[in-house]
Length: 357
Length: 239
Image (tube, rainbow over the protein chains, first blue to last red):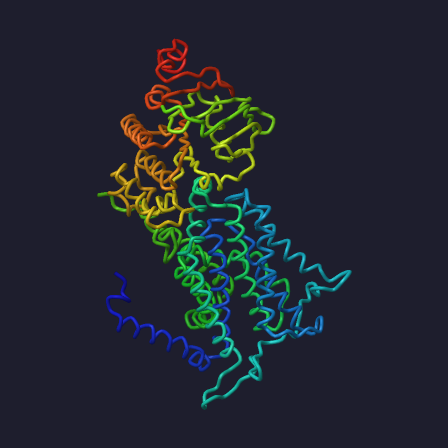
């Protein structure tokens, strides 16, 4: 049935082409401008976040509006354990799992009191949770200075593997590898692992239990699913993806402050999941890429376009960016309500069901 | 009909919603192989009783299934003990296919061969489901959804099936078909506790019945006796 089985040679050629394209991408983008490699790296971080949130929202059907809190937890765990703030400088492969663990605990902490809530009520509580985490980080500077408050934490250690440092450029085989390009490769590796985990999860026993809870919680219980544990697991697993992404964000930026974890970011990640197609791993990735790159493209094109057309700036690019962004979301929801690339079940549902014989 | 030891024994069951007592100390039992119904008007406490049995509501009293107390066991463990609920309003997984719904019913089992055999058995009992195996369950008609809910429950190979208002919201023709299915499930030896507003239908498949009224059991007798009872005829059979 699958293309892979019908045309194995073509399939593997395609895989090889995609692999080469992905490997060459940062080198090509470096020629355009290193900024684009950074934008790509941020886009990959948003894919991590969107995939993590997809576990909670897409698979288990639990609307979470405070997801960015787990990103914040991961980011601050990394910042505190690898910066002059406490004088700790642990290597990144030690901190990332610690960050994932703390985010996981935070996820369970959010999940436990909200087990009986669904829909709007759950959304409100998670929204509050996201704000609590941000405000806590903002204020944990006295009496003991843990987070350095609104000033944030600076001079966070970049990744380092042996002598290989990720913040400076290196020339290997006559090719220039900038810092962001090196980060890109490690992000790409982790991304592949994360995608593989998500695809497996979707087909696993746990994945089926999540879908059952999403569809009907009482029936799920009647089928013998321990809904409490399975929901907590969704929160905890989704959160740990956010925690890992946060840690890498810290290292790449070298600086974190509470401003990076506002409600707007949660909504952004949720938009990626919804726009791309809830529950479908590939759709969510497409949504994350689209919502990461389109605003950046607009940022670089809106001003020159206006200058060329009218000879002056009529509309501030930032305003226009949000306008187009909003309109795109409205149009998508109008014409493709299940997302751009929906999970097959959603597609059938929104298309008015499968054909009757 | 074989009056062996009771598989389900309920003594002095109390269920309340906050300060409102919905079930006020009822006692009844179901013997292995029997089909027993709980009939009564809207709000008599039938569904509340069933939900308490399925551990979806906190309750007080004695609740024995197969000699073990159920009162403090969580809902999801009942299926393993051999008691499966077909929830009120069907509760199918609307966006999964019919086949996937049935597989969810066997979620707690790992014996592949047994599951496959039971799926065939369910398809034999409900040929409509086999025709629509790959169809998304939400697109089935109400009656087909009710049959799917029953089929899904059978996939756990229950010893006691709890059926909550299987006729609810169905066209009269569909109701007849659903009850034919219930009759054939019972004929296969599954013990059934049926909660139903449609007293005539319920008593036509059950061997015994209990009449519930405002949270208590007011009458209990064999199905033919209840059908002949003037009080029941007037209150529940519309005569």
